[in-house]
Image (cartoon, rainbow over all chains, first blue to last red; front, side, top):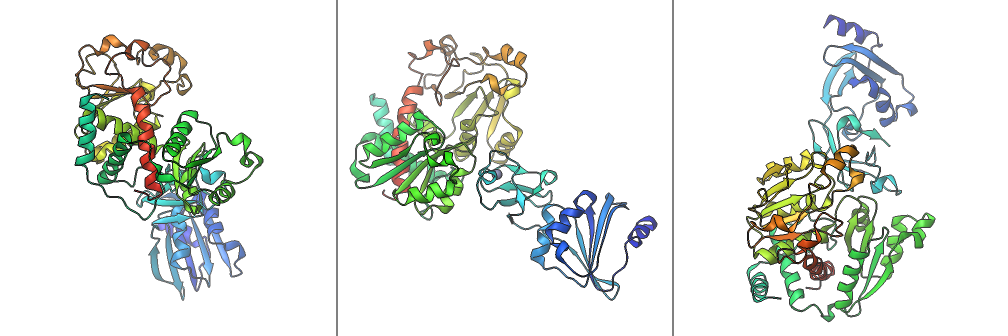
Amino acid sequence: MEKAKKSEQLVAAIENGTVIDHIPSDKVFDVVNLLGLTSITTPITIGANLSSHKMGSKGIIKIADRYFSEDECSKLSVIAPNIVLNIIRNYEVAEKKAIPMPDEVRGIVKCCNPMCITNHEPMQTVFRVVDKTNGTLRCRYCGKDIPKDDVKLL
Amino acid sequence: MGTNQKQILKHILSNTDYSMDNSSRSLISLEGLDRNDILGLLRQAATFEAKPDRKILDGKVVATLFFEPSTRTRLSFETAVNRLGGRVIGFSDAATTSSSKGETLKDTIMMVSNYADLIIMRHYLEGAAKYASEISPVPIINAGDGANQHPSQTMLDLYSMLKTQGRLDGLEIFLVGDLKYGRTVHSMLTAMRFFNPTFHFISPEELRMPAEYKEFCRENGIRFTEHSEFNENVISEADIIYMTRVQRERFTDLMEYERVKDSFILRNDMLAGTKPNLRILHPLPRVNEISQDVDSNPKAYYFQQAKNGLFVREALICNALNLL
Ligand SMILES: [Zn+2]
């Protein structure tokens, strides 16, 4: 606990905004891209490879003066189902939100089957979330299942 | 047709209830069909077997778009359209069409749907028919999309079982050969889940039924046993033996292929102790997995099975056009 606290402090505290916690270290920049953080003008601090007793290693992103809708967040669950959003008001955690897995994922993820029509035709991919706890997606077109660890963003 | 066959046909005609969902007329896979849907389509197939030539499609144009060549399937569908009095347009090989010049599937489908009342398509990419059905203003019948689905093949397999056994319920079905990549055996498991079957999976070690399909069987209460030997003792209780090809290119270990290639061949002498109602099915084309000496055995049914494809496809076409 002590150690985790310390690593939190490595990333500057924010007065108001959102802290996205428990991001797998290798997915930090996927989260940046999915939320379009590169085009945000408020201060953002990104921490990666921080030690976490729950995950071993994790990433944190703190975004000042910015809150995210449920819809924006649900995209994140595809790459990292255990992400937690902390809503910060006046330096305090006002609310902790786990991200709900959507029933369907449209246009974010690439099908891993090279013979799938979606990889050859200019069209939107669609996946049904068949296993919400494990984050398994099933392609609407070719029917192949994609385990969470094989999910690749478009 | 023997007297017994006629009786069975009559039985199919009189005993199945028919109901179909009218919301979408495309046929992409059998997954959405329930017991009554399947029996309804088989009953329609039986009406076409009793009277194959009917002018139901008079004035209709049906397109057969074969982005991947398959002469057997295409001829069966086109014969079905012709026997129903419709007209056929289309192509039998994508190399001769604009898709070889880089036209998208969407553009081809939109263009053809201007001319045709129904599109029957085969494509080498998985999910192609599903996507076509979402963009096309006319119904689509999937005549095979890569390794994915081939519903008319499964329906003719089911029709052949129903016709030869007089029932679909409670059959002992032996699937032999390539159970790992065989698309027909996988969709048969799905379609048979309503009919309380017992499956026997007989295959080389490398080509065993994948775990996900065995899981599917457990979830749906389908009994199955696995065998690595194929001999007369194993098949003595069979109602249906469904043979598939064991292909060399499916093996990662060619030594293993050489070792097993002759172990999954059905020979006539293996059939001596089998049940009288046993029938042998095969999706065709056959290479050597069924010896020539089986062909003259009355239990061999694979050529009639292919013929049944015509009646089943007549039913699927009329159903897609909402004409029955
Ligand atoms: Zn796919």
